[in-house]
Image 1 (cartoon, helix red, strand yellow):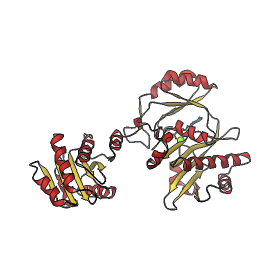
Image 2 (image 1 turned 90 degrees about the horizontal axis):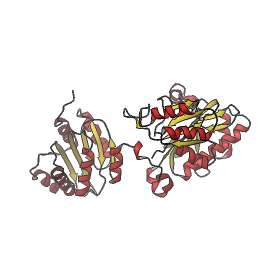
Image 3 (image 1 turned 135 degrees about the vertical axis):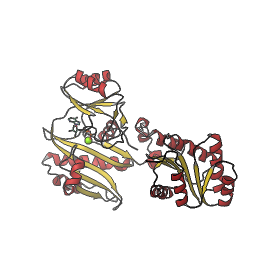
Image 4 (image 1 turned 30 degrees about the vertical axis):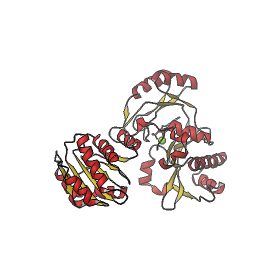
Length: 390
Ligand code: ADP
Ligand code: MG
């Protein structure tokens, strides 16, 4: 789960990371008021969306007076901000963060991620941070410093100092960096984060380190024990199709084609996506109904998949181990009748109670298309699409 920059800054500040003073605004008037409240003569107005790359997309601006703050704010509110990291729809801007402008001498990149290979938290850092960090990762990957943290010992002072030296920090900056690194590590570990990123962490004109941007992402499976983090969820930033499915305990992934897929298990879902592509089609989405799919769950799954208007055909592919094919078949028949479906539905069942499941599908009197194998099912789904791709 992602959170907003201002929320990440508040969390990191509570662990001891220095951040600029700022305030949240829900309207242009409030943005102007926040600037006045903060004082000074320069502010940065920042769109709060769950995405990086806002600066390059026009979502961050340095403003010199209160009117400029309010007028830039009014141009942002309600807009869909499209960045390099979002899809073509972008993310809606409903909150702004107004912050005192910092005087920047240097921008550093600092990231904490989970390195699956070493099974450890890894720090990635660069002395050349800022908005071009992704280009740098491509053109000069060697300039990125990497360091893994031993979970039994945690991030030690000497490791943190070594990284500070590698980044070329001097004098008092070294102690500041050590304290920032340790704070980020604690925030990551104590709150079940999966990512903490500060880009840029700047050296100000007076030589101090300050986090001008912050990003945190959390392990969804651990949210049950982190209620304060779970509260920070902002549904306006999520794909509504995925959040609704999540509410029903289903996992849904939205894609861009026209074949809706109801499958059990992520592995089988991946294989099904591949087979659809191989057969010349494009999946619109896939929904994992998991184990223990009752007929009611199957109906919910159909509703979720069909909420995507691009869906022209539904492919149900179930390999029943814990599941029961007869239940799934009953669910398919019920869904077809209850939801008054008119589009083609291809059903491939295998595993527990498969004969009974098949019988229910074949004797339903509905125009359901049965398939024996995954390859057959994918081909049938592609062939029965109403609008054939050009
Ligand atoms: P994003 O990463 O989404 O583009 P950032 O918060 O990193 O957004 O802002 C983009 C750039 O704007 C930063 O790299 C920095 O140069 C500048 N910036 C951001 N906040 C401030 C601030 N408080 N004072 C001065 N410059 C800032
Ligand atoms: Mg940034």
